[in-house]
Length: 145
Image (cartoon, rainbow, N blue to C red; front, side):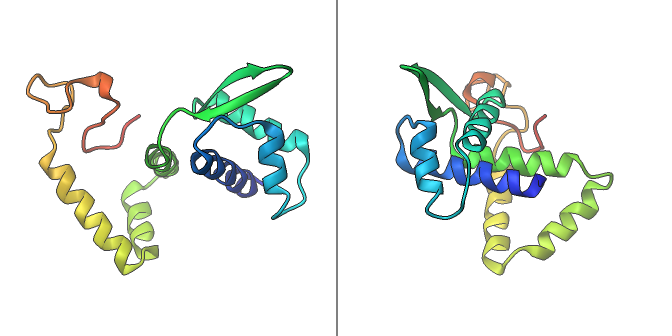
């Protein structure tokens, strides 16, 4: 059930990013129904949950809401990975297993990301930081919490 909910959240967020405009529950529902049988209330609940988590903002449009993303797909993915990693009693072992699941291309992307992270200052609020301080949404090289 939890995995299915996560998959539905991802499917909804994917549509919101792809459409790149405010969306209604009904629009998302109609598109999702091309892939699966799903209830209006399920889509409404997931959109509300994503709003409460801070991933979507919403604005009233008559009796309905229009939802739009607050952040990028990359920031969302990073937060999901960080949340999953934070649940482990042994983060190092979890990373080893995660790396084992990666394709060679994903491992190369990880190497590239580590090189970029090594070039970034470890404290983005430092006065010399090119990110300009903590209000930019950037994080240091370690996991954020």
